[in-house]
Image (cartoon, rainbow, N blue to C red):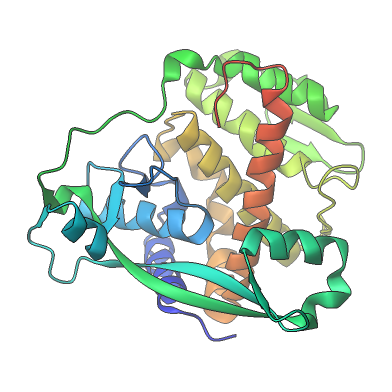
Length: 303
């Protein structure tokens, strides 16, 4: 499948970053996820990652984005915007058999239950350009969409561990998830540079654990470097979404242990770019799964 403008731009930005030894999905400028400035809906998946990368490169301090039509309707003024529009994608699905359009979420549910019916649907992507709030005059002040006071991260993570039923221990010097025995191991909390590095590592390994056959059942061979690089992409991207949502801010120098994957990721993006988008799709499932397994007992955690 030919890549649309959104995906081409994201691939290019990611390859450029990785070639500079910078892991792009870990870079962020705002503590809040990017959202549409009118509907307040947070962008997901590819769109979120692209807007995150652009915000970092452009040093935007506003997490709101608007289409040209929305700007015009609200009578805002767009300034210094030449070449600053960012292409985001919207997917629609056509049901060939019943001759009707479906929401992409409806399509996903149908295919998940009946994968053999995939040929009965056609996918269409449409591109819309959005502009960051930093380029727009007349906007109301930024409202923080997420109140950290409502979230107790340690309790939330403890709930996730308990709800997933994964074995969890802290000892030694390595952090890893062992899929064969469904076990997470982290070094003791007191050896981490700060509490946020500790939380980030917990979330990363918890994201790996969602691949277990009794959870989301992501099949990968831990002994195959290429397959594990793909799985690492899933855990990296899904945990980056969660960290941004929870305002877990970890310094780049705390991530050196994952730089061994950079060349593998470059190879994936250059030779099999759709692997990235499969990983992003899986990451959306991981994030939803983690959220679903934290909110039942965590009353203060808002989606």
